[in-house]
Image 1 (cartoon, rainbow, N blue to C red):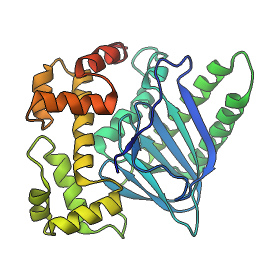
Image 2 (tube, helix red, strand yellow):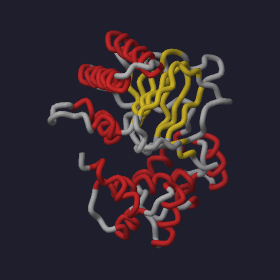
Image 3 (cartoon, one colour):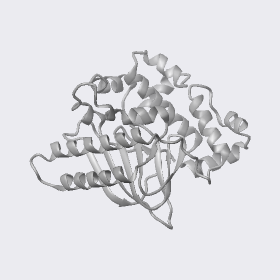
Length: 292
């Protein structure tokens, strides 16, 4: 099964979407998916797990999950205590275009978690109450017909991000703990793929490095992660290529090579399949965002 590319469009008049107090269940949860908007998930109650990029995290009430653009993720609920959560989606350009000066450090939350690869944080009681209140206000404004609805939503979103940032500043997050049910070989395989994404990754090589059979690696990886080894590697490579297209002036051919593609036709086919654009079109369409 390939991960779902959940589409939001930056060209939307108002690039904001909210799913308020949704109860997660295995029957209704999406498989691995990704999108080009930022996402925040606040856990009101319940227990479960979430797979993000290359890591499994335990989820409990009071947790906030920060998911940058183009990051593979999937919530895995527990039937005995279903998760109740609120998810907020928005285009990076939505908040970037409102920044005044360079002092708004809280706007860098998504870049910071992407660099540290620590996507889960727990809110202290004081900040938890504030974030829950702000999300209630976001929901009310989102459902309202007020003429100034968009401005109000933007203000509440900034307050939410500022509060989360202050929580991060006052209680530096500890390194994640892998879920107790995930085998050590899987952690090693995910780390290996991430560290050698530009190399010649194939099933036999990965299986040898993590000391499991190819058959077991193939079967268990898909069962635990939700997608095949080859699909996971391909999505990671395309995400890396997208980052390089936006944030560098490298030639497309150089980017393809650095992302593990040994031929340009293969790179173009794979990129177009996932984005419905050529690499050059993608770079051109995202150029204004990176300059804001």
